[in-house]
Image 1: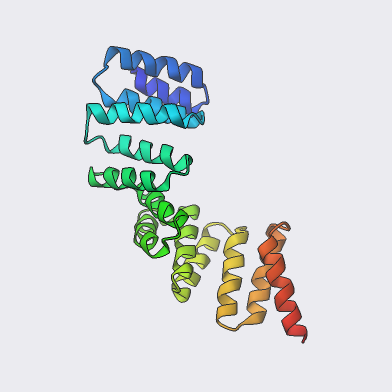
Image 2 (image 1 turned 60 degrees about the vertical axis):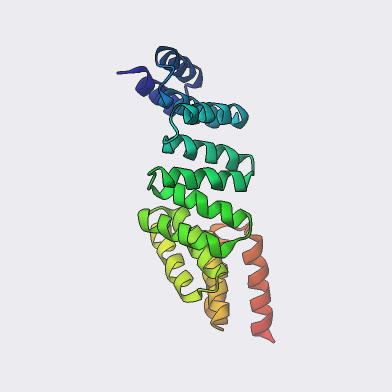
Length: 219
């Protein structure tokens, strides 16, 4: 097994020092190969050393301007630093250079969400949802974005799909409660808020909404 594969295995097993040693040796042996730098960048991300990770991803891009996974890694590093515009630029370059996975579209969508551009986020989250129909986080964020864009029926459908994937998803229940209120079905809303609280008794939004609905029903 080559050193990069060994290093990835060690990283997956949380043996970060051993992984770093193997990646360093791989880079020393092939200094003009971008993959070693990309893997080292990913390792540094796992270790929450985003500043150094940025340097390794940039080095990979210097070597190969078409290294899509280097742009993706760099985007993630900027995202973790809450530099959402910079992250967005890198994710777009990853897509431009051929990366067509759910993760990159999802992260692109999330950069727009953090900048409160919910309309711009929607097509990317839609694409991520198409590519990862069984990913709970992707489906939930897509459903949330639909609601934020006023597409209530579509959001309801996606949130129900989230519950099929994960029955104990308190936030999906909460959002279905909000959808029910939009449709003026207070009792259905109350049921969802109660279920959200059964799953997560600390769900403050659900608790507040439940008390408001109960008060309205009692008047």
